Length: 157
Image (cartoon, rainbow, N blue to C red):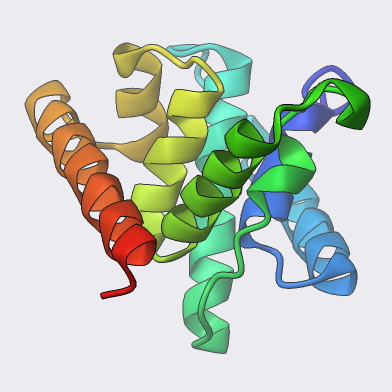
């Protein structure tokens, strides 16, 4: 189960872990929580969806316990093109987007992560526990918030 879906857990750890040691600690905690909760898996959703939900809940719970801000490292978990083929302007735009994403709340970052993973709205609903209408509203607000942040950064306000 874990070997087939290890990428899911690792991505959550990269999203919510402050540094390499923090990511590894979080990974271990998520594995423990998955082990404890496995008996309660009812098969009503895909195993990967259930694992995402456990991993996100564990990560957010861990953050709240430590009362610290999330240090999002999107460049580490988003596959990117080879450095030789990158366009500098495009790379700068990506960096601005990553910086803007770092300013989002925990839940907003989770929504963005799932969106970038090409998860359907239905899968996002299951993972995040947000109904379809609220998720779509939240997604639109996040997009607007990212536009505002990137404009502010571009104009130095």
